[in-house]
Image (cartoon, rainbow, N blue to C red):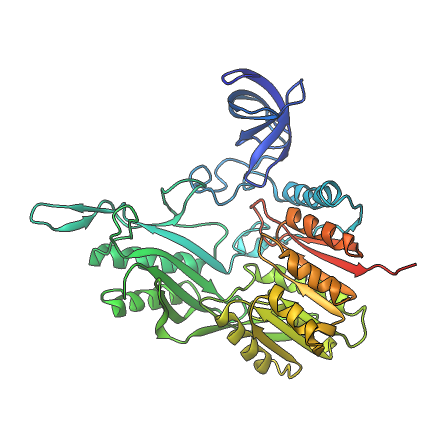
Length: 476
């Protein structure tokens, strides 16, 4: 096979980046942008490696039955945010469930009980398909194209403010007026920011020249209460005429059905609340228990409120297998998972590296009356072995709940869990590949994967969350 060659392919699968996957007659894997499972296409090879190639569509010979109608999202080709957006939602779920199963079988070498994926429902009464308007956190880049200097030394933005998202490996920002994954409050806050920047001639930061102010904005919306926090990452000490910006935000967020409660700016040195409170409050219902969580600018919180409730219900079902357990909540963020099971436990001990998140977690424990839950700031892979060496109660846990970032757990932490002989591990993973890698390591340390349940936390993207139950094997 060589670059420029034309081949005909039947697309069988899709990568997490949204590239269709097919095989040539000779068995070479080809990744094709914009191709979907079920498509038959002729493809021009654009890059050829030893065992795989990349290509572009020349012609679609047969259109997949799973392809959505064109126009589902006007930014589909320029945003990069919905690699699965061209696929019907039911097919997305099928592929994600298969992805979890294949990673565990191929990487971990384990055939475990994989339950059907937990998907989202539609809301026809609100005009929404399944998987729309679910994100409670929008992170949007801000661009004015840099700075140009006019006669007399006056500096102005190159173009009007653009707020939105960028495709992979691109600096270009798509000015997204309405993202189908985001709620109205996020889009309203972005529009208020555009208006303010244009009227006051505020520029975005340009790293090429180390000039400009605005980098990106984050909008957090509490689905349970309607409270909204807007965070600006800036290159500087503050935003000129910030009171005007806050006024614009307050009006537009209210019109969109939310309540602006906090405006925060962050730079390289500090995080500062310039209007309202330091946190917003959300409510979550898990197995008929109503929980309240305070969320700060820098703390982690699940981006899909409705699916979070389902995910935590699964975690609770696994915790019920042990009577009155001592629970370790590792990579705990704002403490939400541990607090969702605190009523089932004798003690909950959380560890989180982000200081603001630990403050949130301890405050959330007080808010929810969880007197048996405490949270500590530090690295889990360092604190757990230290606690074990000191023979502290925290290291004699019955259950360890792991919710690591996409990179998975540090090997030192998995070794520490095994050394402490923790009987049950509940692993909440956002990457099936790193989950499989860590399951394999735990297997070598005497554990077995009992079952796993995929949960679609990120519809229209290539990502999937999985809750896995892992137990220490009984010795013969």
